[in-house]
Length: 298
Image (cartoon, rainbow, N blue to C red; front, side, top):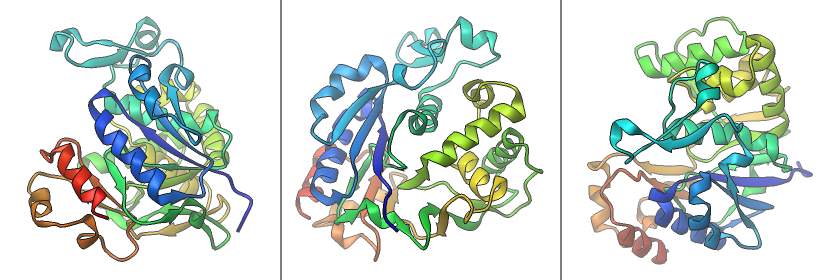
C-alpha cells in the first residue's frame, strides 16, 4: 500500500536530552521512509533541543500543541525541583495539577491534530534504533500496523483496567470486558485521520474539549484510548489498521533487567528476530556512555 506520508514523534524533556541525542543519531543512521522526525518538548526546553534539528528533524514547543490555559510551572510542594501543569483555566475546568508524564501523553494526542503527515510513529527518547527500518513498512495488508496484544490486560491489573474503563467512558462505549487487548508498547503507529475522528467522538460524548475531558482524570493511557477507538469504536479494518502483537523494540525496564548489558559487545546480541530497536528506561542506572558504546558497536 502506498501513498501515506510518515512522521516520527518523540516527546522529551531536559532530563532526557542526552538520551534523545542518541535516539536522533540512531534515527539518522538506521531509519528511512519518514518525512520528518519531531521532538515534542516543553517551551522552556526549546533552546536545549534546537541543536538536534536538521533537514528531517524539527523541535515543536508544547505551546504549539496544548491550549494556553494549561502550562507548566514549578511545583511548590517539591521546592521547585519538579514541574506541574496547571493554571487558573485548568483548575476552572476541574483539572488536577498534572505531572510530566501526563503532559507527554497529551502532546502525543495533540500532535496528529497539528501535523500534516498521514501516519505518526511514536519513538520515546530513551529508545535506540539498531537495525535498518523503513517506516513505510508499517503499511501492509490494506492498512497501517497497530500494536495489539490479545488478552494482554486482565481484570486483576488494576491500573490497566482503570485505563480501559476510562477509554470506554470517554468514547461512549460499553464497559470493557476482561481480558482485554493491550495497545501499549514502544514504536506504536497511529493514523492522523483516526485521531481527528477520535477527538470529535470524545468531545461529542463528554460535552467538553478533548484536553479537559482526558486530563480531568489522573490516570489515563493515550495508547488505550486510541486502541479502543479504532477497534471498539470502529473496526480495525474500517479504521485502516491491521493488528500485530510482535514487539519491534526490546525494552529494559528495571535495574535487574540491565545487568546483562555489562557483558554485551553490542546490542545485536540481545535483539530478537524482527526487532529493530532497544529501549533502556531512563530511570535505570545505565550510564549514557555505555549506551553510546553499544550503539557504536553495531
